[in-house]
Amino acid sequence: MTRVGLRVDVDTLRGTRLGVPALLDVFSQHGIRASFFFSVGPDNMGRHIWRLLNPKFLFKMLRTRAASLYGWDVLLKGTAWPGPLIGKRCAHILREADHAGHEIGLHAWDHHLWQARVERMHGDRIACEIKKGFDTIAEILGKPPGAAAAPAWMTTGEALAAMERFSFDYLSDCRGHSIFQPRIEGKTRNIPQIPTTLPTYDEVVGTETKFENYNSFLLQKIRPNQLNVLTIHAEVEGVFCKDMFSKFLQAAAQKHLSFCPLQQLLQGEDALPVHTIYKQRFSGRAGWVSYQSVQPHSETQHG
Ligand SMILES: [Zn+2]
Image 1 (tube, rainbow, N blue to C red):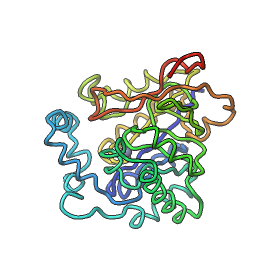
Image 2: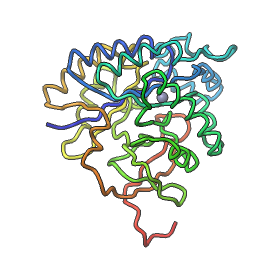
Image 3: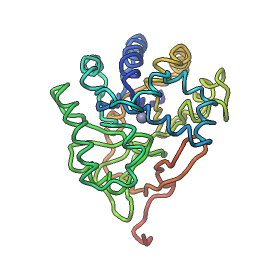
Image 4: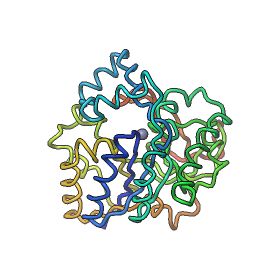
């Protein structure tokens, strides 16, 4: 039996309203528990429309049909008026996910702001953003979120330091291959990282694989005896690719794969290796992404 950590990122109001209830249904049919990382502040994802000015991003939009993935309402939201507060409108959906036994974590207060500005934000500003999201989830569920996952796999030294002001058991901020203690900008940080190991739909469909081959492409990438963490998006697998995702879960069950919340992967892991987190651009995404170094950090190395 190979375990796969299943992480659901929820970026928008539409994803929370439509995608999350659909995924809760699918998960209950398959007897699966997962980790949901919610964005609970203003839905300003429409500001991404400015990225249309970036030809590379326009190309990505056309390739992945982002307008049909997210809906034009999402693309326009936040461009001319302040985005609606997702947590306030969808508190019952967060509670429903919690009651169904899923792990609830924090994705963002303002997903768009994080993506656009985190690189230039100082620790106090970042801590303020996290606190708004942390407090909103704590208020909705009557308990604080035990984990957080940075939007778009973008983290910095200032962000990891800010995270330590909160009671997170682990963070899932980067792409990588094993659970580790992060070292960033020359400092080793306290909170363990559980990286995403598998690609996401929008990164590979249209380039590395076709829509109709995506499920088998993904199944091939899941390996026994190593860390497997899959990130799906409520907006994608919960709405646009709902049927395909349901078939993926059926095929996975036939291959004896079992899905679990990320928290379960942490159990029994005590002395973690230290790995560096570095930034890298990659073709499937706009901007940079945080990565776990392949080799562990050794004290004899400098820097
Ligand atoms: Zn996200």
